[in-house]
Length: 71
Image (spheres, rainbow, N blue to C red):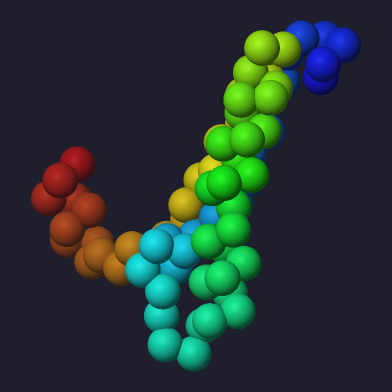
């Protein structure tokens, strides 16, 4: 990526990193450790045209009626 001066790095996080949940200490801790290194990588690699992002995944429970109503 550095040689090409272009690239994208996507890291997968979780909303548990911010909220935390009962009986999920190890998982939440691991996910909470992603933002700092992501920011550091972005600063280091940005000058080479490489973007680094963390996506915080979550599960949303909605009914089919809600989906149709807002479509």
